[in-house]
Length: 307
Image 1: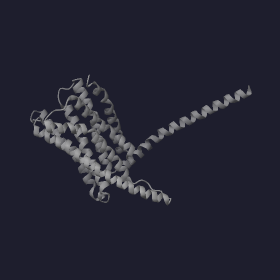
Image 2 (image 1 turned 90 degrees about the vertical axis):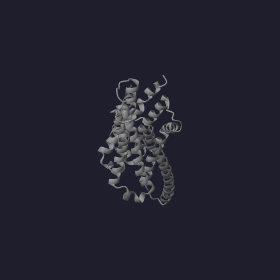
Image 3 (image 1 turned 30 degrees about the vertical axis):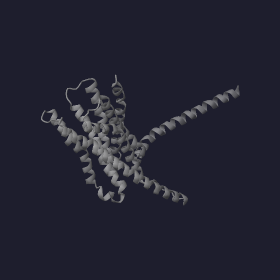
Image 4 (image 1 turned 180 degrees about the vertical axis):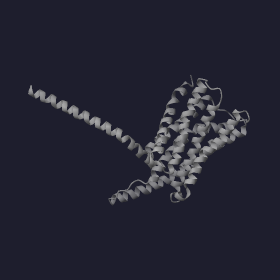
């Protein structure tokens, strides 16, 4: 009964993660204006978040609740999806960190080749250091219960990414606040001189990465606490804590598309373009209904006058 809430609530963030990240992936793939280098990282992260929503909770429900699985393949793929989401977020953070902290050097540093290397590393590191050893253990040729291996995976995929993302978040926030103040003073001066100015692109980028990082650190704080407890006292977390960790990981993957839609300027613009025909049809239908209602009222009034 204690875990029944988990099997009920888990479907909602999983569905949001699947639908939201599918929307982001399709937008970037099929809208030519979104084919820019920073969106490579957004696309890669959206694919990994989609995998989290598709594999994480459904695997636990099917294999843990319904006991339909005879092997650990589903769990191994779910863990790979979670670690890939973490490493892809680190890759995107490196890109946005350079763009915000060192904007004048970004074009020279973040070439297409280096961006591709970061994306490949975001997938190859969890595959090489987690999935392949898990595959080896499933075949009976490796010992995944080795404490040094578990310790190294915890440090590499959980402690170090959280520390890196926390430091990057703080520095990006400090830099973004300084830039916002400078831009506010400049905007006030230009408005005084009656000159219009658009918001710089890097401020929109800062909002996106800050939102994504803050959500990630918030959702992974329970995971980090359980890892530190394991390293200090070698105590495994209770099943309720594991359920909370899994649910927060899926919630993190479901929130990222919302951050893109709200704060990423190019994705928000493309969504508005896609939604414009629907909004026009709704407005046209409301206008027709209003005209018909007005005509009916006029005819009723005219009939009343003749009487």
